[in-house]
Image 1 (cartoon, each protein chain N blue to C red):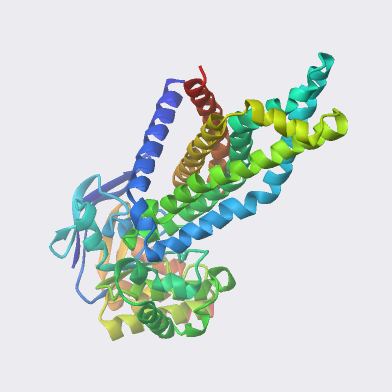
Image 2: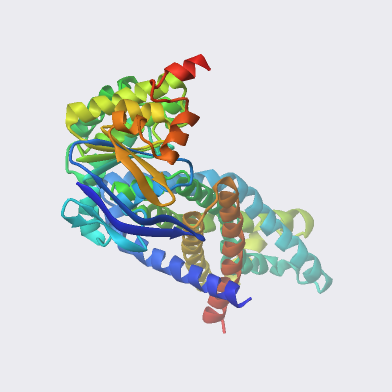
Length: 252
Length: 254
C-alpha cells in the first residue's frame, strides 16, 4: 500500500517534470522543421476523433434533453430544457465527454506509440542522436492536444445542444425557437469559457499522462499494453477529479 | 580511443559487468562476443551512456562519458553512430527521412543538401532506391542497412554495432559484414561490433573480445582467438563448429 502510494507519487513527479520540460521546448516546436509534426498531431487529434465525437456529442445532448425534459414535463416546465441542456453541455458534459473520447482514442494511441518506441530502442536511438525525446515527441503532442481539445469541445457543445433541440422538438413539444430562446436567457459566456478552460487542462492531462506512461513502458508488447490501459484509467480519474475542482473553483 | 576502467554494473540481482577492463584502439574493429546475457550489449550501452556504471569509469579519448552531462554528453555522443539490434528506425518516417534526421536536427543545411547527403549514404549501403519507402516496407536486412546509413550520416569517429546480423539469413549476414568492413576501411571509422556470430567476428574483427561473468576473458586477434586455450572461448568456438583446423571445415563435415 505504502509502496504503491510512493510509486504513484514518483510517477506524478516524473509527469510534472516532463510537462515542465515539454513547455520549455514550446518555442522550438514552432520552428520551421518541427512545425510539420505539430500539424500532423493536430490532424491526428482533431480530424481522426471527429467521427466518434459526433455520435457521442449528439446522443449526450439528446439523452440530457430527454431525461431532464421528462422530469420537467411532470411540473409543466419542459420549455426550460434549452437552459438545462445548454448549461450542462457548456459547463461540464462538453469538455468531459470530449476528454473521455480523446483520452481513450488519442491518449491510448500516443501511449502505445511512445511505448513501442521505448521497447524497440527508438527512444535510445533519439538520445544517441542527441535529439531530446521530450522535445521531439512530447511537445508537439502536448501542443496539439492543448489546442485541439477546446476546439473539439466547441464542436461537442454545438452538436449536444442541437441534439437536445431535436429531442425537444420531436418528443417534448418544445419548438426549436423556444429551445434557443430559453438557452440564451440563462446560459452565460462564463459557462462557455470555464468549459473551454477545462478542455484545455484536460488536453494537457491526456498528453502528459499518455507520454509518461509510454516512456515508462517495459517488457515488450505486454508493457505497451499495460501503458495503454494505465493511460486511459489515469487520464479518466484525473479528468474527473480536476473537473470537479475547476467547477468548485468557478461556481461557489 | 575507448577505455573501460574497472567498471561494475549490477542489473537486478546480477553483476553483469564486474571489474571490467577493456580498450578499443583508434581505427580498429573490435568484436565483442559471448553467450547471451554476458553483458555484450550492456558494454556497448556504457560507451554512449545509455547506461551508467555503478563504479569505475568509461573514457572516450580524454572524455569521461560515464560522468558527462548535458551539452558535454551530447558532444561526446556526437562522436558516435549506433546501429541498434532492431535498427530502431522511426516508423512514421521514410527511410530517407530517417537517414536525414540527425542532419535536420543538428545542422543548418538546406533541405536540398540534406537530401543529397542522405541519398549519398543510402547509396553507400546500396539502398538509394529505398529513399521514399517506409521502414515497414523493408526487409530486416534492408532496415539494418538504412539504420547503418543513419548511423554514419554525420560522419562519426566511432560506430557501434549491436548484433548487426541477428535475425538475418546467412547470405544477408555476410553482406552486412562486408558493408561494415568496407565502411571501416573506406571511412577509417573505429568500429565496435557486438555479436554472438563467430563467423562474423572472425571475418570483420581486428581483435575479438570474449565476455564471461562480467569480464573480458580473452582479447586477441582472430588467428590467436581461434587457437585460444581458454575453456570459455573453446566452448564457444566448438559450439559454432569452429576449430583450430579452420572455421568452415568441421561445420561442413557435420
